[in-house]
Length: 618
Image (cartoon, rainbow, N blue to C red; front, top):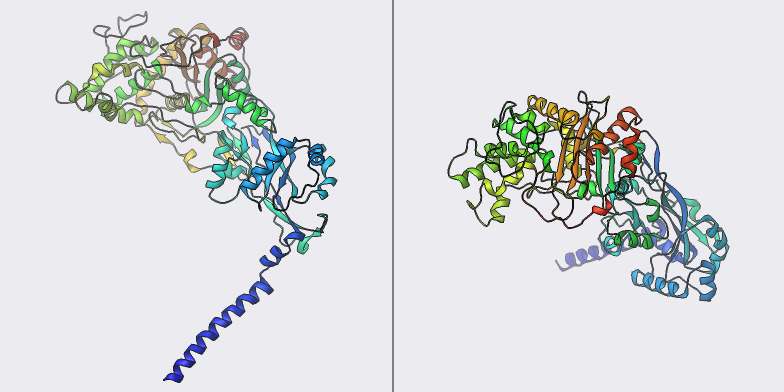
């Protein structure tokens, strides 16, 4: 029995020995990882940064491309600089820059390369190339900075910048190195993984002086970089430039959408900035200047700015009221008992069409009250809660109070008040009623939306009850793939039959209603609705939504101009010019065009907009 145990122990040790021998054989004869590590002083690993994907407009016009430049990297453990002054003179940096950058590189890693000097031109590289052999530990990597064919669309495109330390630590796939560039905002950020491509690597043999002696292992270990995928956007860059020119000297937004596809045709955030200022070595200097600008040009307002929709929201009330059975096209309400003011118009037969055409506040006050109290039970407080819950659920289908899912990272939900919201505001159930929330009837109070949501609402109106989530990119890469989310129609739960009276009311609002003469296109039937978003300090904000032509709509639009007054006299003319330009390819109303290109509302601009309860709401 003892002999048997000895045999077992012998076999165990023999098996362990064979495992070690096998592992040693693999490491020495098969795996070359340690060989490369041992030869590290004689092999140079060169990272190859791929070109970032380019960006095109809907007609195939190039918007963003890459200009090759060179970045200088340093690996602190290998770095040797005998004469610092000579080095600084050669590379055009100060002694302070050299010391601080080397310190940062050591803090990051002594063995990993860190960016020392970025965006050297071809001329700079040619000048220093031969001298690099005198400075072991320093290497060149080819990269590129973004170059723009147009100054338009900068806020929606976004920008790229050097990755920050926190993002470097938190990255999931260990792709980025210190000094790498990454999309920070806009499409550049949303489509980062598609745009960035895959980096390559090549190994080169070098002698003790750092001079390359040829490929290592005949290039068998080299990996070629793969360029990033191109973005094919839905933006019409010429229309974008035109809309930008109309929003000069103004603060606000323009969003135009193709209703049948959800494709964004133009997205203007005003004021904007020259995107080339945030490309290249002067990024920090210009970014700080833009960030401190009180007009906030870096903000992409269409998906993130908050406004009350004003009277444009009356169209939602009309549709929801008809769907719930509380309203019909023939419903008539007088001005009696309404605490909101009305505009001057004929009220002898104040039906739904007339109320939309003339934006009648008392009409929609009474309509909202009826929507809330119809088919509800209990006391006034309980009935208000029941009605608001039913109302808010249907209004949410239009995209209010939630994100639409646009392909931008900074979309905000806005606010759609519901029962839970008011229970918190008034600190308990049965503590509020219609008289506390009636300002919602005309799109004011606690209701806030973004310009993007209102453009999408205009698309819903054009489509008679459905929309495709708005998006700026219609294809990625050579195959022009797109997320199925941006192909899937979404119903808002309102029957198409209810849209006819709304469309006709909108058409008449343009032809002989609340829209001024500058907002009318003689040979195009445009359905529109004016709005004035309340602003307690200074002039109210001008709002207008529309679609055109009335039959088979091709474009839906929302325009917000801050501190410009009534929607019919500022936002509506701008929207009409953009619609005319898109549908006809030209603008015949040159006098109106010139007037609004030169119009400035900057003297009226304010930044604090406290909530105000009552308004004319035109």
